[in-house]
Length: 76
Length: 430
Ligand code: SF4
Ligand code: SF4
Image (cartoon, rainbow over all chains, first blue to last red):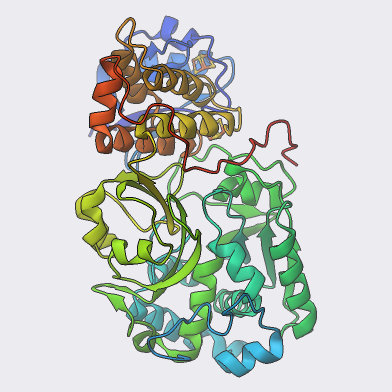
């Protein structure tokens, strides 16, 4: 069974330099101020490796991957 | 209850009278609490059942059924500290402050009820540092009643800085735990908040006071006033285009128009902002809607924390939205990019619309900003602003269209009905 993964951005930690969007443009776009916007709630299976790389490379440790079973953060 | 159809939460406080402990007991009767630890388990179960019957929903803004929230916490059996939220960071809300100033013992009773239900040893009451009336009254009340009954319950008052987002639950708990009063990032919902090694159970002051009534009289008596599934009376704070702004206690289900009439509106209401500056605008069609979640849902509103701000034909909807957005942008806790940069950008778009300057399709930019800001902060502050702006633009769409055509609306230069306080500015977070 494929585990569904969800990317999360800690907006307090994020510095908005946009490194994630360079590492994984398939997953992140940037707003006009340079802060990342997730392209989709769930990480497509093909992009799990690149998502993990982005998480690892985020200089502020602002990114995390969570299994999508628990309720998605901050969406109503 | 004191009188089945009269005021309950504000019983005995007419004319601004503060009930001291003796008067409080004479008005409301004494508070039944479990005699000892062995009794408290079944007592807590029965209490939760009674709250279920009462149809009480949280009066702090969320509108969540209290029986489910407390029931979950009772079953969780965690070591818990009870936090009573009297912060009322929303400047257009005054009901918790009024309750604390005039009927403080009802809040303290409710706090004892929660502590007994959760076997908590500590209750922390959070009052904004700039609210001396509420703080003084609660302090005096603690002194009047002496040591709380039961096994050495420690009740204390904390005073976090009085600013908009400091009342947000995670900010409040963070402050009580020794941190600053800014929201913290909590990826999972519902968030687990802790003070030291204990769980924090945070309850709004009015909800807490309602628990003191339900513990005394039972759920059915509480629900004798109410509408459909939501029981009881609720406190509302009415301001804006009214002759006598203030706090009133109303039965849940009272039509919005009747509630507003209590404050004598001036002119004809053209829009009503419900829930505060991060709330929802509804149009005049909502005046017949019953004050309850079910009653207000069809018009897109909710009772929330009881804030009602009335706008009439003499003020310009667009300019008012712009003013609120600007004020809210300045209340950002300065932590999250989409809030720190997004809200000022949004406020600037709105200011241009209000001025009737539509160079470079300001409306397109405005909507683009609305689309990207929500859901991207650590707390719901930006989401609230987006909700207020979106619903405001819809309610005042005629004014908006006129402004976008560069005509401005009929009420150019009209005075504001809002009384926005000064922004907290550089005021410390600790
Ligand atoms: S790499 Fe990390 S800190 Fe940098 S913009 Fe992306 S999430 Fe923010
Ligand atoms: S969203 Fe805004 S108000 Fe909320 S924590 Fe972030 S910066 Fe502060």
